[in-house]
Image (cartoon, rainbow, N blue to C red; front, side, top):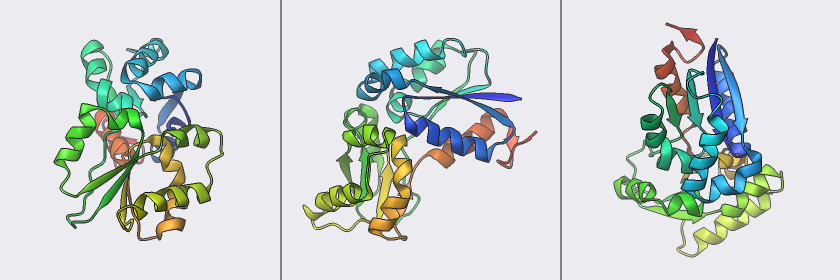
Length: 220
């Protein structure tokens, strides 16, 4: 059976692993969730890289694929791991570009460490739409603990939009944890709200790397 490791520091990794298991039943998903070092992994790219190297040491070279379900680690350290460990395949969540050509304001929900990276600035530069960044660092811990309420989600984003009299029509999720609040976002801002995240794209890339066709666990 194909073995895939999902690495993260919290609930976002669990969410991605759940979706991966459901989409690819022939894949054995090994969850490496480093809760103990969550703050270190979420706060700096260097800390995330160090923790990932240590936690993944028993798996490198012994599994079919390692996926980083952490945007900060993915956008800053994926190429490092690919160069460092050439006998192991790695994949990570990428910043999702909207597929629409409609020109409208987009709000990106992310955290400060991600937003400070050169990779994030490059992402903004290449976006065809105007984008506003909303930093929500405190939400990751609250999601881990089950303490983030729909009221807080709605009020925080509405207050952010109110500054420039914006209406929320499209968002980009640049934190794996925020996949947990899709339902609340739809409730607060309407079911026509377009939500962009990289989970499905990463699963499609996983199929290509592992040579699985159809995305339903049929191996070539």
